[in-house]
Structures are given as structure tokens and as C-alpha cells.
Image (cartoon, rainbow, N blue to C red):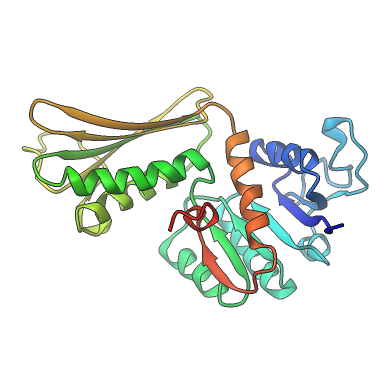
Length: 269
């Protein structure tokens, strides 16, 4: 019998933490090994399965070192500042890491890349299988619609999201930019206000919407003369991200080092 993968979940009392726990409990190949949350959380010391009516024997803790002891992989959908702490701790403990957190600075992304020389990491702004396919489709569409089409990325998320544009929107922008042979940093337009003048060819625009409980909607628009092509993904449940993240955790099993994304997990490259 193959031993179960020992998983640590960060941010267990948050929205994504909740669905990740559900995913671990539902998968016989996985076992909950550790449960992390921020210091001061009133749930610390409680059984991680309590909110599901389960007794797991795994207590919610703010002690990263304790949670990671003898673990196989940490799954992290928190905030950049917390993710950097987990990144350092995983390197010390030699524990694989799945990062679904967004909003990282360039320096923080560099730190993740450097850490992948010591431990295996899957780092992706969106763990959805559908979004991973969408990224591929957008790059291919941009190659075909390179001449005479304007590209706009439109995204909407719930009112609690703190970063904008979303990490997924930026990744879609990168895919579109690659398709037209550019770097996103050289062609992105993140805001428009006042008299902006005519739209410049070769630019990629972003529009950000926030409100309600929208899990995540992303559309890439290719607007030409006389026609418009739109490629859209809509997430109705965070469960889709949890399924992808836990698939990524299994992908890392047995790997020693390396930086991967969901394209690697799904064998799309």
C-alpha cells in the first residue's frame, strides 16, 4: 500500500483554507498532517476538523516549525507576507510547497524562484484546471489575432479581494503578450481616466471589477473591426482551486527541487 501524502494547510479558517481541508478529507491519497493560521486566531488549539464535525487529532497552530515537522507538502493560499514566512520555513524543513497566493512583488517572486533551488514548488496565480487551459488558449489566440485586434483583460472578484488586477488576470495578460511577441511590462495599461486619446495599437488593457461574493470571472477580449472574440472562464466555487492545488501537491511528490506551475502539473508543456 502506497503511503498517504502528508499535507499541511495554511490559513485553515479562511475561505480557501476551508475548501482545501474538505479536499484533503475527501481524498484517500492525502492525510492532514498540519493546520496553520495566524497568531491570535481564536480557533488556535482547536481540532482542524472541528468545523466539519470531524476529529482529526491535528490542532490548529500558529507554530510553522511544529506544523511542518515530518510533513511532505504545504499548501498556501494566504497573503504575500505570510507566504514569505512559509517559504523560508519550508526550505529549512525540506518540505515541498504549493503557492496559490497572489499579489507578490517582483522581489518576492525572485525569492520564490531562488527557493526552488532548494525545494520543489508549484507557484501559480490560479490553480483551476480550466484557467490553466484558458492561459494556453489566450496565447494561441493572440498569435492568430496579432494584427488588427485590440486586447483587453476583464476580471471580477468578491469585495474582499485585496489585490488588483488579480494574479490570474496578470497571467492572462502575460500569455497574450507572449502571443504577440511582447513583454507585458512594456504594453500593459492598468487604468484609464479622463481624456486618454485614442487607443494605441499593441497595448493590453485591464479592467478590474469588485463586488459581492463573485469567486472569480476572467475574460480576454480580442476586439477587431467587425468582430470580437471573447474567451471566458467563470468560477462558481473555490472547490475548483482546491482540486487543482491538491493535484499540484501530488505532482510534487518525490521531486527534490524545481519551480513549476499548473502547465507542468497538467502536462501542457
